[in-house]
Length: 317
Ligand code: PBG
Image (cartoon, rainbow, N blue to C red):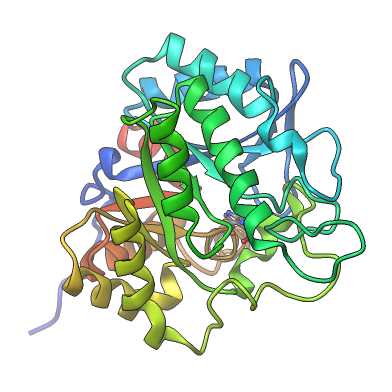
């Protein structure tokens, strides 16, 4: 008997919008909506435009956002990251005033803010990252975001003890209800390539293998995840997602904590550019890729595809 030729409409109905977190990049200014060549469909926004974007996403049914800041200047210790009125704080404050029920997370890392592009503080004349100063800088940055009203701060610097340090700083300042999403198992991945164009944050020398997990060391994952939970993380994360589905499944097996996965820039760019070249159907590809992440055990997916998915589900193209 001949098999039926499928004519099903591409559908993302298995992806639930409240499982998705949409990254938003903000820089100082007004009326800015800058394309990013490496990430088609993703922009750098000034706060006013970011508000417009988040509001339209919220109207489409997305409720969770992850805000990244792009500083006006970079220097050795990345001090802009903890300025009380930096662009992330301004944006978060306005977002929470306008959409109090939207869940706003902020990325807490120094690589976009330092002139050397590393995720921690390298004091003048020193070779390596100063661990104590890095924890202090990350804690100050997280506190700035908490004061602006962030629901979650998401430390991604992979500095040992960063979750505990941030938790202590938040508690001491009275922000017990600000939660922490730890980038617990973050690999030193090639898949971050397109992201580094966003804020020009590629390291100027060396690589990140001293603090991110080398891609061959997946055996460390359970230890890293459990350490973040012990330190006080409310949500744990595996990043990237697509090349680490086995890791996601393993994490799911050792904890019932909410598990986020980051469908990173390189994973997004592959899907987007392949679709543009006509190699595959974008909607079906997104459903296949994100479906695999869910099967592996993801509770939350941070993804640049979130707005497209919401538009597809709303019947807009
Ligand atoms: C900051 C940070 C990075 C990403 C998220 N937070 C870059 C990096 O570690 O180099 C990458 C996200 C992506 O590729 O989409 N440390």
